[in-house]
Length: 254
Image (cartoon, rainbow, N blue to C red):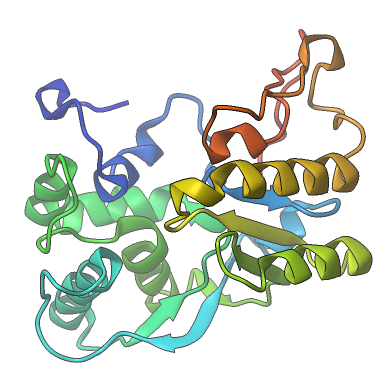
């Protein structure tokens, strides 16, 4: 996927995001989401794109702060501020909006265009082995704002639930999520779980997931699925059964 293999290995999501649109065979309209996301009920392309191909953006009510990027702030904030500088030069617009932590609709042509518009910033970020204050957030900030400002995206509505699994209210949140089934997506984020709590939380999440998803989806092979062990492992143990696509099955293009 990385055209410049000398940049590897990288441990920086910002760097990886600069290369996603180069995946061979990728659809013009595609989704980018992290590995702690779950589709909570049947989802269609209409959740993310209008019929004419315009993307629906998950604008957040939260905003970036003013000022220059700073090493003591969260890395995504610095990356968003760097995006703001690029967009101010390109469009004469000062952007302040963040975007929700949810599946992100992407337009491949927009990403290719951004790579041509800002080659130095994109290339620098792609070679940033670890997150740095000089990174740009290419998928959930640069892509979204540029697509919006060029008429290829509009604000959308996303029914999602975010849960930090180590927080005291996490158990109640999981119970409510299981009862309501009122969200399209949910994120179970392991921000900083204390080691002493990992086994308990892993077991709780595993129980929740087995209840919420009692059967493999039609894109999973039930023959190859096995429940992950819980004892002596991290919160990775609580993830869904490690299943693969059945032979002849294919993920639908967004």
